[in-house]
Image (cartoon, rainbow, N blue to C red):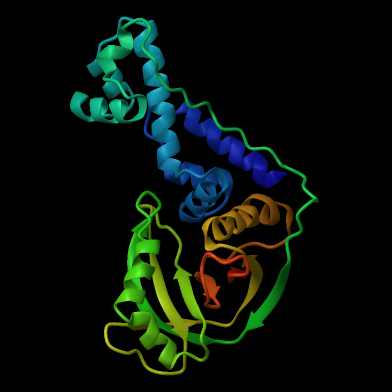
Length: 279
């Protein structure tokens, strides 16, 4: 329950500072984990990014004020952290479908996103299979892309690597026919590096680089089913159900790894392993 309580404390901190600058350092202190790890966990548990949640709450509050007070649009814009009325108008219209000034009119339909509240769901109907693996040092060779939670480039990057022959060339030097996706976690700017690669003893081939993974223990989970939405659902259950109730703590020194076993990604038996390093 400690994790759930910390999540709700972070939400309360955000709610109390929608008018002010929201400090990622303060959020990190509340949840007792690096902000990048929290942002990824938040996204997997809620289906939206932390920044998007904050944006929705600010614009929900802004709509309430425009409807119920005589305040000017520019004053509301500045109050909620927008540097200009134009930027505020664009964001407001994107969410509510109308301009801010229209929100002052009667019979205008607006959207409201309520404050989040996390609860612990006790589930026993669907089991989660996992195992603990300790591995010595190994090497991964592949190509990388920088991505963000808001603009996830990973699916398109996989498609590009398949179409341009990168995946085929990597498999030729790999220890087997599996491919790997390495995620290095999100930094304070909400960005991460992601590698499409293979485990190998060979040197990097053209336009690739190598990453050495040091000896570590790993939590290993299986995702079996069409990659969309099965893989995302498995990640969500790991962070939303398993880790909050387990004795294991994820290490932020190593990347998380998705291990793909090949085949048709939309088949009912498509298999991916999720490897999470633990301290």
